[in-house]
Image 1 (cartoon, rainbow, N blue to C red):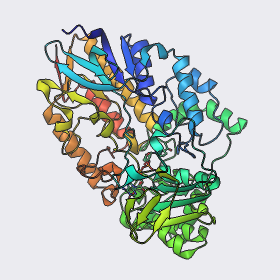
Image 2: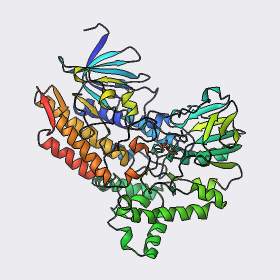
Image 3: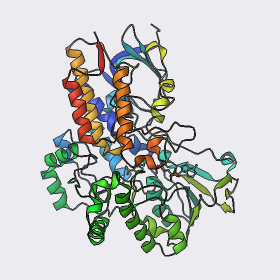
Image 4: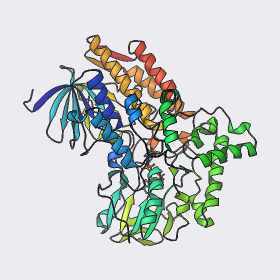
Length: 537
Ligand code: N01
């Protein structure tokens, strides 16, 4: 072998976010593996390291958007509010890295650039941009689903004389918007979080909207000591409920149909959930919102009514009303004063469906009807989701098979955990698993523990490699598509389908069958001796 090969490991883990940190702890401290994490950022935290844009906070509540694997961690960590801001979540992840002594096995500032399967040695050869080359039995992707920033290819950006930023790669020193004319492109979850905060700081904010979005108020509030104590006393039950739920949230599942209730009853339910705020509006109202267009229309119309009631200028309100996709078929944002922000004198809405952007000039943005002079452009334009980060790495499986080629017509996997042709490669929250349709920490912990159990089994039985079979993969891909086709998710041009990236094949990537049925399926596969995988000794 080449003398550049610096070391021999059991496992290389790519990424030090929620997934990578727990995977390292599990691999090293539970399984006793020699494991190393490579992380491109100069700190741990993944998504929460990169996304420092104004208003960045979690849309899931802190008490369930957190690790459950350590009761001590659960009890000692104090969350300040219902929906913590990005700096607090980053502090939490840094605390986890320190508390479990993870840093000594994390190499920061190092991007994995290539990985090739060596069939003879049954190992991965992994290369980084720092010049490392290591051999490892297992390659575990913890790259995250939303890490490859999408800056749209708009003519003239290179000529722009102001400053521009993507929300997913925000400057660590922050951006001072005071006295600035700011433009923000994109009204997904990120744009909707950033808009009210930037509007308060900037001289003027122009929001460029391509698709109006349904958003429900977050109703953020501090966590009182009483509520925090009650949560801590009930953590086991909260975690059980989350694991055994559809979306990974510890809510009582809704068994109501929107169509079985009178207009007044429905309205009362929506009003109470609107006042309560957050994802319960979607997950706790009516189960058929996800499946039935008529049921969905009742929620969609309720939200439109709210927008019209909040936004004072009727023409602006109408532009903000979503109309071309069912509620929840794109990831639903939650907000703090988003629609209210359009009542401010220093905020303008530009509807890109009416007046598309033609170009970026030295001084601003030109649409088909006017030129907007701006000093700053904020791209809240999302990510090459689910596949982008993994495909940035040149991954070659058996016989030199390239993952980019294999996934050219959309990602294919078995259970979202493994890809046929790529032995001993595991993908935490990979495409084909519930991942982004769920409360991520729940799905991350399930994958880490399943992978850990699998590796323990392989070692116990002297198995050198595990690989999904083509048949199992084909059947799973068909199943993922079939379940998705029973929902309304197909009715939106969303990043779930890859529709936000020009040229990306449209395939519904996450698994919509629910967190608990999915967990049962994975456990069943393991109990049957890893059914659908071929194991080589
Ligand atoms: O990205 P998005 P995001 N010209 O892809 C528009 C998670 N998240 O960063 O809808 C003009 O959702 C695009 O328009 P359209 C969460 O899972 C979590 O907001 O494609 N506009 C859309 O409005 C979320 O879903 C938290 O027509 C263009 C926007 O940009 C995911 O991250 C917080 C355009 C992109 O929306 C991504 O959210 C925030 C163009 N060329 C985000 N290209 C948590 O709380 C795109 N757009 C954990």
